[in-house]
Image (cartoon, rainbow, N blue to C red; front, side):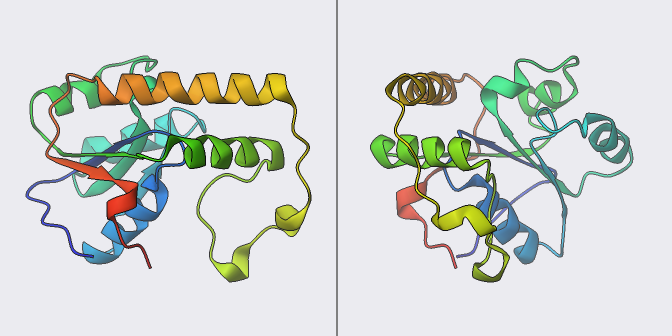
Length: 167
C-alpha cells in the first residue's frame, strides 16, 4: 500500500481500534523512518513531541480528535487549521468489531500494534463480559467516532480501515 503524502508533518486523526497505529508504521516505512508520536496527549510525551516539532517537520503524529480538543495548547490544531500538515483521518465502518476490539483491549491492558513475535503473554486469556463495562466502553467509542466523523478540521485523505490492506 502506497500513499502520496504532499507535505509534512503527517497527522493521523483516528478513533480507537481503527488501524491508525499500523497506518503510522506503514507511513514510517514509506517515508524514510519518520519519527512517530503515538498519542502524546494520552501517554505523557507531549513535552518530547513539542520539543521535536519545534525543530523538525518530518514526523507522524497519531492522535484522536477528542484528545486534540483536550490539549493545553493549540499548536497542532493551528497547524491543521492552517493547512501546514498532511491530515489523514482513519475510521472504521464495522463498529461492532471496533467496539469488541476496544473492549478486549481495555480488559487485557494491551494497547497498540504487535507482530506475532511480540504478543504479550495474556493474549489468549478468556475475557469476562461485564455488561456495564461493555456499555461504557461502547458509549465512549461511539462518542469518539461521532466527534471524528463530524470534525470540521481539513482532511487531506479520508480512509476506512476495511478498505486498506495492511501487511
